[in-house]
Image 1 (cartoon, one colour):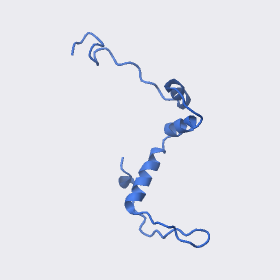
Image 2 (cartoon, rainbow, N blue to C red):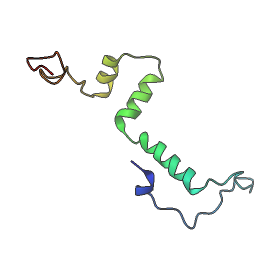
Image 3 (tube, rainbow, N blue to C red):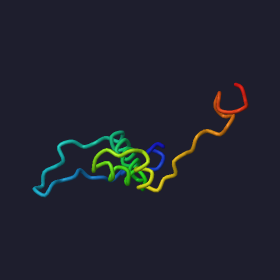
Image 4 (spheres, helix red, strand yellow):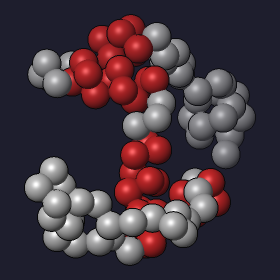
Length: 90
């Protein structure tokens, strides 16, 4: 997903000034804003946020993570979909 598809540039944006009236030391360009929006969009998913929250407490195994976030863990491949996993010989 590209952030450029979903966001339009802020044409009238003014430089940010801090509380003391100082300008931000560097004004990001359009590409940097697009990249930041794309990266932040990765967090705009409940499951990802839940996983990040759980992992801040330390390592966790896949079973624990799937249980905590309510995601379904895929089962083994169906017979015949992988070589040697069924009657079909690839």
